[in-house]
Length: 281
Ligand code: HXC
Ligand code: NAP
Image: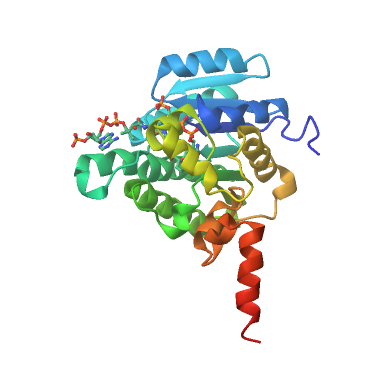
């Protein structure tokens, strides 16, 4: 399905591209011919990831805390200085952990909202202004989650932030469409990464519970998300603007459906229930 030159010569900047899903997307983009820039707070993580990924294609790395607008400005300067341009921005950097909300300080809220909401806004604004001034077209891909629509208990700083990013995606799809700037988003369900699992499913019980909720009976594989991202940033998706694609094995719909829990009934139980439900005929 994917031709080797699908993303040929596109310069893609991925925030948080040194680990997890960001790294998986980066590797796929490189395989498809892109040139890659990655950022994150930890230089040593970026350096090692870039060294390993360079076996596939050209990787530029630059440490940046996306919560700092000046650092974001320097990131864009450095990346454009290196490649001469940026064609695609993937707002992937995030922070998250499970906790009852009443246990959180305002600093805990700030920590997550600073990365997810403000960080995404700062990167979007800095690059969007540059694209518009230069008359350059581009694509912004935002990684949200399925609870960006619904909200979620126990990850409230993340939920309010991802909801904001969803609103940003849809708002700018309309406002910046006239400049040829596309906005797209991916809403993943559970994908086991070290960063996410250590903060969201730190025990076997919590981890197993994640899987039990998914109709397809398994968690996502990073390559599956990376392929979706590759399509969305490619020219084949040139008319998709403002759309959010869910990739969660059907998880959020089963959570929403009134009778989804009946999945646990056995065929024998259904036989008995059929007799009861037909009686009213
Ligand atoms: C309660 C916590 C906490 C926790 C931190 N805090 N962790 N409170 N429970 N587990 C509080 C601290 O006590 C402090 O408040 C404040 O938050 C800031 O903490 P710091 O450690 O100083 O923050 P910082 O170093 O900036 O780190 C940010 C972080 C951290 C978000 C807290 O986890 C991080 O760096 N995460 C990046 C990677 C990540 O989270 N990846 C997972 C993304 S997965 P006080 O008041 O004590 O000063 C994802 C998937 C969602 O988003 C969907 C899954 C299906
Ligand atoms: P991850 O490996 O922890 O990725 C988060 C990345 O963000 C890290 O590389 C981290 O690097 C970077 N980052 C954090 N704070 C930053 C900051 N202030 N400035 C710059 N970079 C920062 O987790 P992941 O699972 O791959 O998550 C990737 C994306 O997918 C996130 O948007 C997440 O919300 C989303 N998502 C994941 C899942 C899942 O199940 N895994 C589900 C739904 C959505 P540093 O720590 O070095 O800064």
